[in-house]
Amino acid sequence: METRGLTAGHGGRPVLAGLDAQFPRGGFSVIIGPNASGKSTLLRCLAGLLPPMAGEVRIDGAPLGSFDRRARARRLGLLPQQAEMPDGITAAELVARGRHPHQSLFRQWSARDEAAVAAALAATRTDELAGRPVQELSGGQRQRVSIAMALAQETDILLLDEPTTYLDIAHQIEVLDLCVELNRRGKTLIAVLHDLNLACRYATHLVAMREGAIAAAGAPAEIVTEALIARVFGIGCLVLADPLTGRPMVIPRGAGHA
Image (cartoon, rainbow, N blue to C red; front, side, top):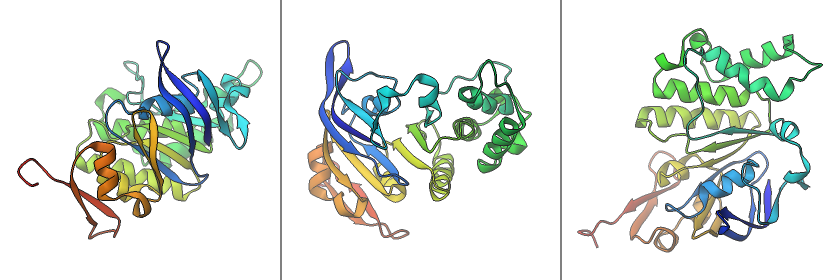
């Protein structure tokens, strides 16, 4: 995916202005940046939820605007910050909603749909939760079921808006490990994350944003420096090698550690 000259915002006020960004096919791209830097606005544009004021989003060279809603849903899966989960719905019923883009007046539920739901539940290790109401699941379990719903769409690209928000550290790692597994199976992932160190550990490609613009983009080891963190987040830090992965690890300097 890519954006070309993308200008977008809310209420007539641009948040992004003339943005050019590339997200490699087959990569796990993570968008980072401070609050109000335009991360979620960019993701909403990539998902087709926010129409550009100018410029465009492209998939494999084709403008996203050239796809109708159903065709777009067959190319892009989206995990919003808070997926809608109606009362009483079971995990399997929620995952089955991911098949809606493949349904029509002349094509109803089929063996292929059943297989896609089963595969999504298995891939996220939620098949044992299939018959349980989603309200009874833990936060980490609900997030995995939500990812399964997006997987059931059978799209090449999966967009995730802050998938670890409100999760404890164990469930954050569980969800991101799952993302890496899906990426290794060929999915292109684009996510917004707030935790710099988790972004550095898991992403194959980082996009650092500030004030609606891209400050740097590339592999974490190539772009994450003390100077970049100071420029993007306005804080001093040390950037060391993560002892587990060798990737950049950001240690912020507090007021008493100048």
